[in-house]
Image (cartoon, rainbow, N blue to C red):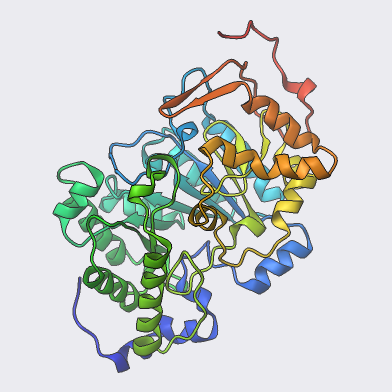
Length: 416
């Protein structure tokens, strides 16, 4: 992926030197929450991070796609958030202290009709937009605009071989476009800051990559100050089949492999945390929320423990609810409950996973009204493997400070 560099040179790269003092300086800007930052935010019940889904539409057909059925745009009889509703939720998050707004999907964020308007809004409010993208829509013009809006970009990059990329996403010609976009991001300067403003999003599967290629891509990221988001499959959605999951042992081997390179060639010492390699530790559950296409609120976009619904309660009410505070209490520090649970053999359906912990908690405590509202909403949606059908009446997203009676429209007859 680029010219060779000596071990001595690697150890003296500015971002590597900085990382010896603060490992989070190797993480992508907007996701680089250190332990002290998280602890301070927790002490003041302050939100730092909001994940939001844009459209569920996507031109790719990735066999490893980790979306659960309720994160697709073609869910019948359910209304997606509008651009104005996205902006209002972002405003509410900012009032709670959020500094980063991340778009992990649900499909390709850049094809959402409100994408640029919402990114402008985030930038104008002094927050960092973080965008996960396939790279299909990245060119000189869009990359320059993203740069000027202060965005951090996670670009899909599963292989240096465009043919392998094409096979993994099911679209011929994709690999060539995405590889060019990766290098255009570097040329524009996304990797010139500490922390960096770019990352590669690489899913390691049993079918395509070998350790030699992972080795090459990992070193290229370290040499070029690009955050490496390299991991095994998330056991959700289309990836929720045991035959396509890396077993726990393979995940451990991958992490140890990356840790050894960091220690021997870059002089980096850290304690790795499964499932992420390279010293990265997700801390979002302690300081953030995830809002899906329809206003459902979860602790993260991977595990997705249901916390509330914005058609019933404001973001502040959900953030401050009894159950949400309970979910945030344990120190996450890299721990991924979703993968650990799957590796233990707990094989629940995608919607059951979202509510099982609360139902156990409710048996021992008083019911949380915010969660009961959310359960009432999702109980009226029949989730199927290929979509969902709602018998509920869609209402407006609740603004901060408003009560449901203030915003509910006159109800129409429920749809069959």
